[in-house]
Length: 115
Length: 113
Image 1 (tube, chains in turn yellow, blue):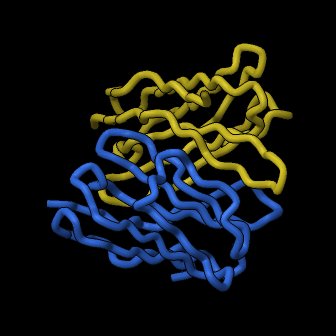
Image 2 (cartoon, rainbow over the protein chains, first blue to last red):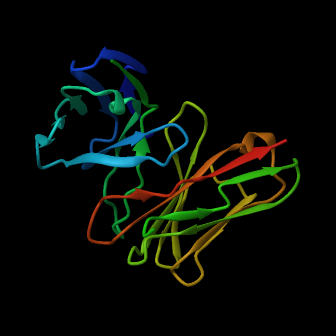
């Protein structure tokens, strides 16, 4: 079945360092890959996404890369700040007839940025 | 607040009781999704609506679960004869037809005692 694996489950970095989170998906027809940030007790917030026709996308300190051949994608956060501390989820989906795209989520990465 | 809203935010119920949750999507969003999130896990897809039509239900959605979106606006998720295993955060998300991005509500945290 459809599956997304996410690593690492926890990540601890010093403020200013970079953080990388990796995900692998099983459905080769997946064509949309969003990343969500979830702070404790709050809703998942979309922070960046990438579609299958693009290999990389950047937005200020965050970037996502996609390797369709290997079926994996990664989130890169540079110059981390304490407010980046949260749980990050990757997801994958594909459009099917009717245009819906249910998201298949990874298990999450708890990122801690220490001052 | 023009985001997705959910009500109630918290619900504590006894095993065997029925509960109903409500989701109000962003006003122009005609696609609506329900997900369930347990502690330490990512959200899991439950069901999808395009306007008022329910187009897919996950196998996670047993016959005790039912969802509706009668006028293509708000949606309700009902759980009958709740079990302790139903304890979770129930999240609603919505999007417009022309885009991929799904926006989540704050969730309803259900505790079954």
